[in-house]
Image 1 (cartoon, rainbow, N blue to C red):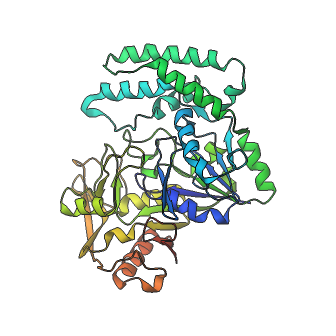
Image 2: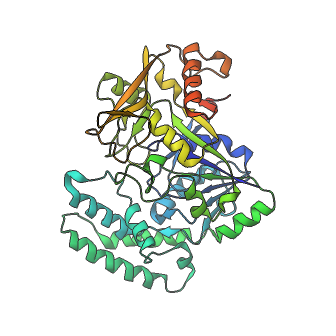
Image 3: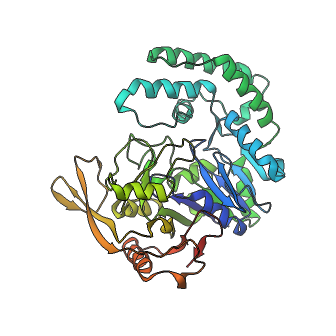
Length: 423
């Protein structure tokens, strides 16, 4: 059986958690393949709003096994908080949540290093979530990291101490004033590790290989978005992992020829958290309205998201890089009430009109070329089928499908799992 992928196509926050939750009934296994607790996947159902950071978004479905893959980085303290929040749902966590032994651990000193590095950059800061993600991936590629499998060894605390000592020396090197009590942080860490060790650790690449042989249906869940990919995103204002389709292969141990459908998620407009270029960003009342109506605040940090019109240049780029086979458009309901909508169809780049994403999209190099379209006034949130859509919304969807050359299979009209319309 092929492994299907579900990816964000913008700067994250597209609504992946909701769609994984909606689709889980069709899959046996949901597997996170990259990122860490810098992710915030919001799920809403039965009047409950729940935010997951590391645990896959299929966790509320008892029919599915959820795997945290080798490409993910795990903070035991945050993971424990997630587990505590799930206790009221009476889930058999030990049997439905499995963790790859090859997943790397975020240490308390990784978070301190993150804070020291960001503080040292001043105005040039990248907008890190300060969760220790970058330093952990640096240790991974530097071959210094600690992994989940190390927790099964008798000497794991010795390995921890050696790496933490190195980190403390690096923190001193930054020579910035960050206040912390490492002893307290380490006590929290060790307590969380003991709880983590009660879960089921697996050799995930072997587990997934055998699951495929048995004909089980697998959905790989991405975090963040394609434009935050360490290679193909708006570097250096990116995350520290490969958020694109290729990251699912390295983050789970799945062969490229085993990838099936690639489901790409995008908002009907665009948002971005933190620093970095954003060609279609709005600084007026329209942008403020999008943020307010769309409740655009980071699920992990609470930071307000920057808002702007949909950028087709960037979206086409993400579709191509990922090999997207079907699309899901989120938050169409947020655009209700705008008399006119705009979509960026090209850029003016150094005096010339271009249709592709160039190396540098900073504001001094790029300005968007817009197509205007009629908006709609109707409230979409109570609609349950495509036939109820206003003509202007159908025109918007048809235009996007023609430009992107990929069908839009799902339109979300609200945060609840029931507010999901299949086309």
